Length: 264
Image 1: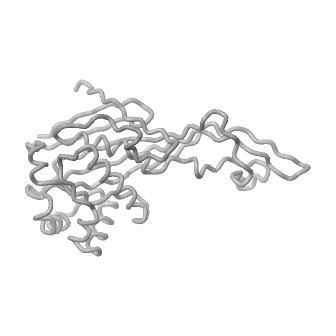
Image 2: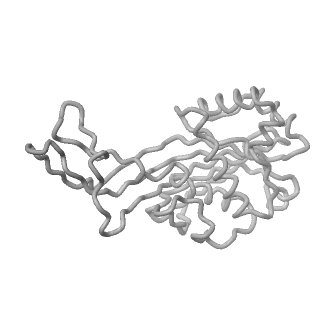
Image 3: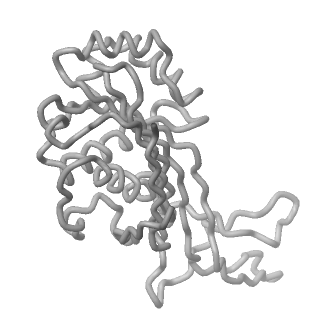
């Protein structure tokens, strides 16, 4: 039997989450007694070098929101498995979104005395949108293209998080979270200088805004999803994250959302 919970969240940071939980009898006491290990966070169609800051952000979120549960780091999981096995396993999970039978057996054996419950996350969507790019003026006399205003940039993500029980040998929770982060320039922000004006192919006098430093990072966009997952685990939830504890890049808006349970 599967239990379904569809939760709608206020827009701006997280859009919604869907949690599918197998009837495993999982309790907060079981998590506290046997511990959890973060195996890794992967991103579809991306190189493995993008993973470390995502892993760190998820570990920090788990430690902040659930200090009552012992969390084993992905670094220790890698050490227990050995780097070649660990890399192969995450590469397979990144591609398929699943663990093979041999992967499950290897994880269970390597982490037998470390943690019973394992977490794997896979970012399945990472979309960037920029609005309000402003205007520009070309100058035929000086040969310059002027400047352009800083727009509002958004980064929207979808991440699937699996909770695996090594004792029963199956996934006991599969959750999908959509979350985002926006950069809203403060009023009076000066326009970007000429070096940020990138011409479109074949349009020498019609450059477009190519945001770089003003884009939310992938970590910024995933913070709300990681928070929601930590809060979906059985047990108490700490008060909302305040600015002092946030891992978000300064100047970027990542506002904790209030969930509303929808009728089934």
